[in-house]
Image (tube, rainbow, N blue to C red):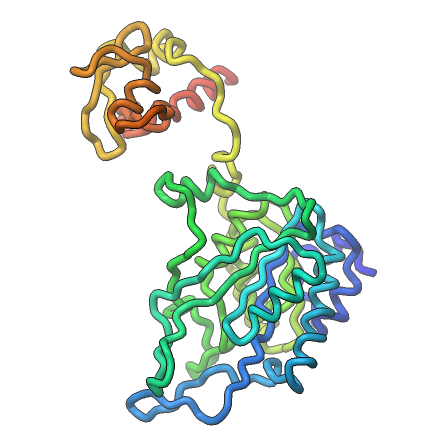
Length: 360
């Protein structure tokens, strides 16, 4: 059995199921799995201009029928469930060839489906033969260990990333292309199904915390590890192909860990309770100061009592923000913006500045 601290931020070479068996119970915070899809591709795929399209015809995607594939899926998912913490969660990505079988198996094993996310590809591969609809999406199943799981979900962070709107279950992300796509010295794709970093960014930032352990049992060229490192999470990868391990290690060593309010999940922290009068008394806001919307439209003036005024009347910041939007209620701290030290910021940010200055 592995000691978990000894395998953090490493790539384990070996069979995914056999190596998963060596990982301790309840030791992993987040799992992202991109298993073989069992595509069952037959014959050559030709573009409309007659050139060959290199799809998925790798040996690792071949099975002896659905029963063989199902047994494989049951085995690796059983181990993932065992090693997952009760506070953790697992993401499994697939396409129409396999995701419905995977979903049934996960429910049969007792996983609790939290969401199915649609990765809508903005640049999908066409259906070259014109015999079916263009397959322009893949499905991610996000699941807890069981029905009673106390999983991590960074709701406020995702809302912030989505222009302060609730994040939806359809993600518009392009296929991995350009400099992000790993290629060998001959210009060939290193891995046929390399996932885009933007996809893993959303997965990891939404459902883990800094220093959490993120495991990928089908590591490939290391997208999960690269994004986990960038976001200050630990990673564990399992991969059996030497070629993929070589490129993954080279890729990850060049990644630098970033530190920001977003990565540290500062948006998940409840804002400090600082009355607006305190900000006025200490000079962070001033009587007769103009307040604006996020778009820069001047909408009211602050008075010395901490209320705001315009042609609608004299109200609290919450009442005024609701009236301006014709809503029953709204949080004025998030609605109003102002200028502070030549920066255009939400007035809510002044509360954090106030607290920071008070602690110095």
